[in-house]
Figure 1 (cartoon, rainbow, N blue to C red):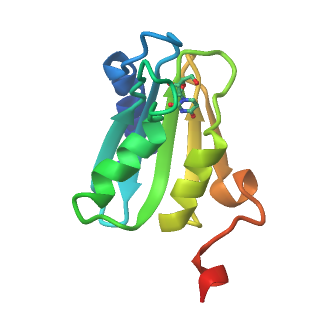
Figure 2: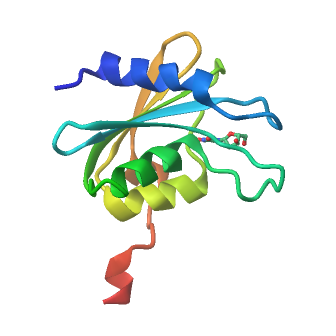
Length: 131
Ligand code: THU
């Protein structure tokens, strides 16, 4: 069992791994799977800009590529006093696997803001529309 504090620490720990030569805006994420496994991620930028991958999606893609498809919580850390919320693309990717996800934002003072993905992505598009 990972505590909220441990999950947040893992997200903060990923800030140093961020590859951000263009924005200089590091983001770290720690994604908890339903079996307790935690996958971490950082943002990875690209000279072409659009290939840039956010920290949240790095964590999701690491997890899914290793067979983990259900998630319970994600902690997202940025070096800002303001809480940094996931972009729209990441909200959509997270919803694919975890519509009930709990989202914990961590600022550079170590303060947290707890939200749900449903709050961040109301009326989201999902696979039920394709049935
Ligand atoms: N970014 C993330 O990694 N996650 C977020 O939640 C917001 C934005 C990254 C993308 C890019 O590398 C940098 O932050 C500036 O947009």
